[in-house]
Image (cartoon, rainbow, N blue to C red; front, side, top):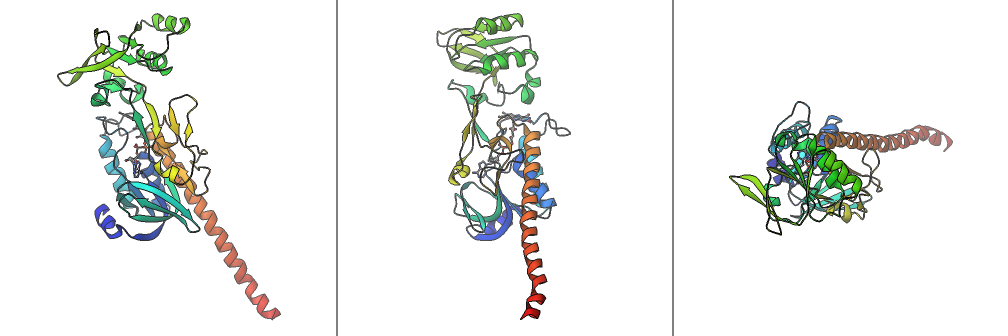
Length: 336
Ligand SMILES: Cc1cc2nc3c(=O)[nH]c(=O)nc-3n(C[C@H](O)[C@H](O)[C@H](O)COP(=O)(O)OP(=O)(O)OC[C@H]3O[C@@H](n4cnc5c(N)ncnc54)[C@H](O)[C@@H]3O)c2cc1C
């Protein structure tokens, strides 16, 4: 269905959907399911690059433990389509607003019109500039103890310190392994208090800049410092900068905010995902940088329900106006 529908609509200004959703990850697809089940016409535009694509499995999603990220998306699309949702494979380049709603333009020129807009485009993990990290990202270069900490339990785990998150991460991963080493790298020197905390938990600290991580037999094997010293490890924890994917948000003139914790950028919204622009919602990592898959999905549901409620309110207003007009008609005839 995906391809047929897509081919029919390619490069045409199609029917007006009740909602256009940009991003078909957990957040976008759960919103599509909620709206489809509310008998709303929904289009999902998805570039097919979920943030966790490099990981072998999704964890902490009840009943779905270990499912491959691509499989979760495949099933999610099927569920959205089973309620009439239409999935466009492609990248939304921009969106504009007019009296009638929104027009989303894909980078191949396809235009899709909708009464409401949900942006669930996720974020990009910007990794520290250390040779070898990107190659092992999501495998044994990690950021989140809940996503993949269990998989590296009891291993020799390095923490690449680039900022204030390092001690926090070291203490979290200490719950999973007694063999933790903090590589101070570009982080400021530790305060006496933090140094004491690490020492109290048996966490080693090594000063000096990290040049690279090396791999042996398809597994991370060591950290190499710029002074040439080599330190064996089996996993490396990093603190990426979480950069929300905001091309479409910015094309609408909406602001992108900097997270006060210094961990990245995001789009502000209320509890339902509504942005400062009426008719535009956000859900998942684009607005909540630390959302996991299940929380992103839940935020999609919240946004979907809020969009449905907003449409119901608009339709009610139209219906009431029409009803009042119809009620007035006989009286005005009588008067005439
Ligand atoms: C390595 C790694 C492992 C992880 N493991 C876990 C785990 O085990 N459990 C867990 O709960 N969480 C895990 N996470 C976190 C998880 O990836 C996020 O919580 C989740 O992906 C957020 O869902 P989302 O829908 O907001 O964004 P995404 O899943 O990133 O989906 C966004 C979608 O929007 C698309 N998109 C972006 N811009 C556009 C555009 N302009 N036009 C069209 N489409 C667009 C993208 O291609 C993508 O398909 C992990 C993260 C990483 C990095």
